[in-house]
Length: 185
Image 1 (cartoon, rainbow, N blue to C red):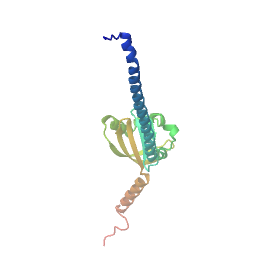
Image 2: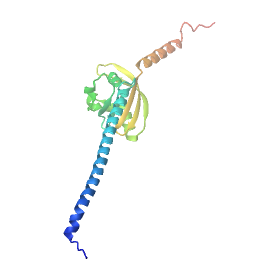
Image 3: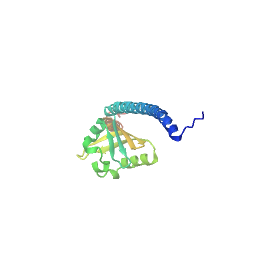
């Protein structure tokens, strides 16, 4: 009554059991992978929607917004910044500020932007920008260091500067000796 089971018999009995176990493991594995892939696709879709939403907000801001990399190459520019610079996206994106505005590296603004990027220090300043056609405009700038380089917000303050200059001129005329209101009684 001793039953001897040979190695071949053991293997023959184990193969169906192992096949079932491997099948269950593969079924669970595929199920988990499918869930992960579906979650990844959903997250990617949500990310694209979120990025587009924020891009739409940035594109339509009242302030000019631009991002330049550490080599001063335009990575992003919104509609208002295009208006401020009197340029198109095609003229700017992918190009350096030096390509678009020759001599920019000789300006005080370049120094401030470089310092902002290198020292990771935010700055606010007023800057007069001269266009190639000889005209100019004044902008209040906010320079922010970001991982990709520098983020610049700009607000056109040209009319404010002109009004301040007119006021200074008028104040100077009022304080000028001989002004008709300077009579001594």
